[in-house]
Image (cartoon, rainbow, N blue to C red):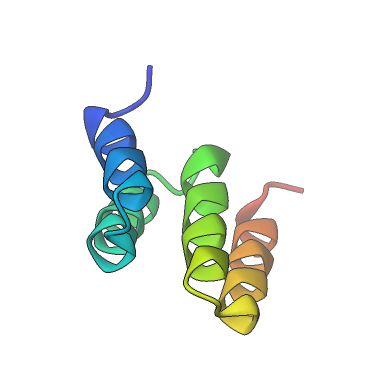
Amino acid sequence: MQDVRYEHAIALANAGRHEEALQIADQLWAAYPEVVDYAALRAQLHADRGDGAAALAALDEAMERLPD
């Protein structure tokens, strides 16, 4: 079951409030690094803000945390 903050972050992003959404996504990723949806959300939010490098970095970080 997803944390309700995930849906809230998506709603904020849909309202154009990407910075607030990213703060929530960062908190979720820090608390639950095993939930790949949170990593994907972080990457998408960075991309939505026009920061492709940060989006790729977020995905790279997620890949590093995957178990072998």
